[in-house]
Image (cartoon, rainbow, N blue to C red; front, side, top):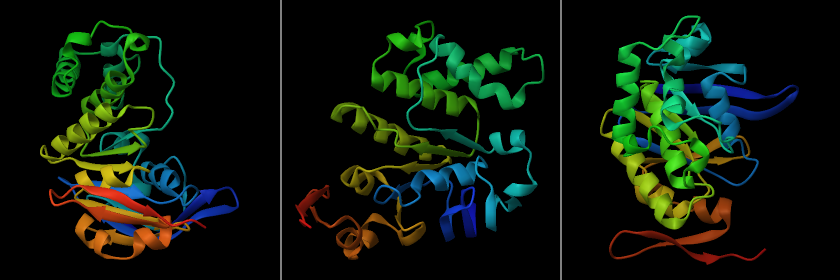
Amino acid sequence: MLELKNISAGYGEKTVLEGVSAAFEKGKLTSIIGVNGCGKSTLLKTIIGILPLSNGEILVDETDLQAMSRNEIARKIAYLAQGKNTPDMTVEQMVLHGRFPYLSYPRRYKEADREMAKKAMDAVGIAHLADKPMDTLSGGMRQNAYIAMALAQDTEYILLDEPTTYLDVAHQLELMQLLKKLTHTGRGIITVTHDLPLAFRFSDRIAVMKGGTVAAFGTPEKIFASSKTEEIFHVTMGRSEEGFYYVHEIERR
């Protein structure tokens, strides 16, 4: 389990997160939602250790994150940032980057590393693209390559910041289905998203952030039954007879 205990963090003297507590389970897909500037991306950067804590503690399977080295963290948690540049390399070379936490200098891949990369590409359906340059792929396939890189990293938790951004509707659905599938391998998947219907449809848990803290945390059904979407997003959500969530009404302000 990945546990946040009363954590605070920010940028220099500017505090963004204050008193955040939450627990993210393995085998679950958790979506973090909230309006712009509420601290969603900052939370992921703090969990991965990019931003330092000013208060509280983060436990990764009962080990204090602050007592772990960069490589130790990278063997536990993979992180895919938003707005990544497209690298000048093939898909296989990109995926092999996930093996860096296990390599010494100079970096030389072993057969086991290449096999791990191949399994990761197979898992997301891009093994046939291994020799293709990254910049020749569609947005959806490129995102799958990044996820394969995270899988090759062989971590128990994967953090993704707005992974569906710039994808068309079909690829958004395919990506969320893939992330859901990955939870069946026992990984904990944590994703930041602005898409409420996707979050409510695919997530096992939803964390609602407001003003740098977690205002609500629970199952989609629990969050849907609360007034948090109206309170924070100024929208009313509905649910079809088939169980699909949708934004029903926008409150003009």
